[in-house]
Length: 180
Image 1 (cartoon, rainbow, N blue to C red):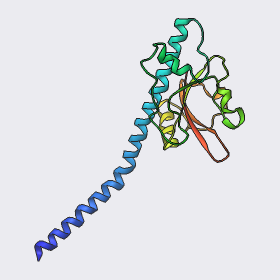
Image 2 (cartoon, one colour):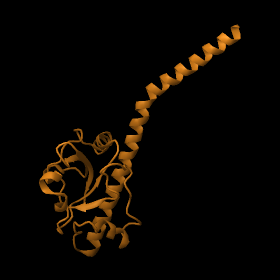
Image 3 (cartoon, rainbow, N blue to C red):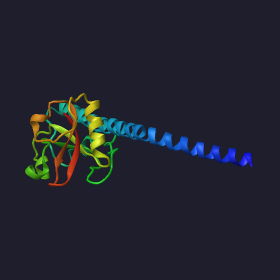
Image 4 (cartoon, one colour):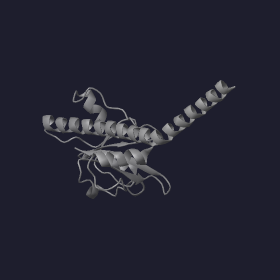
């Protein structure tokens, strides 16, 4: 009988320690996942920005902001392939885009990002767990503030950053960007 009681106590103790570990380590695990996704998305936009800069330097003309410009960097040999989005999900972009403006989608309209002028930024919309990943990007890029709203070129003083634009009054679309 005592062996059964000791076995039951052992099982209860094991389950209790497992739950305590999950409660303590769960948030740490999620934070490390957000940090790794943030690093990967920063690497993707930075790599694309470096390829755009190299293209501009070698050709002597600036890279144009249009939906096919980023893919052309891979086609023209400035990068092996266009990096994919490591933070997939709802409203996320599959690959980076070259744009000349980053701001509120409702006021400028998404098509205004691609106006055929000189591309100033590489941007990528991120998906799942957006705010946490965006805050991790801001922390990694040395920003002194948490990821906030993007209202236009005036806020893009850093080389790499993250913020959100309003797709609708209730939906925020988080964007990681890098200057070219």
